[in-house]
Length: 119
Image (tube, rainbow, N blue to C red):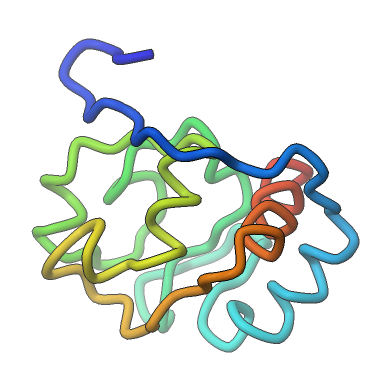
């Protein structure tokens, strides 16, 4: 589904058995170092809040000072966009601020996405 002006979703296969409970544990270990789920003042945060990220336009929606690369990415966050981004952040949005190598295991990605969808 390509909405007007937004980047087309990548052709990725997300495992259907994503587990939000396991995803929360992975989020706590891998993501919560920088990201919060709770909304708050992100202006001085290490990373933007991810609560309600599904359907949000990349580079907008919080007070976090996003990179120009993220602001100009034309991504509207969906499970497929998040899957591709979390797998290889620097490749999916070159020039973004997230200094994270990515998560390669498809099941772990599916679990994190299930968790983010539940928040």
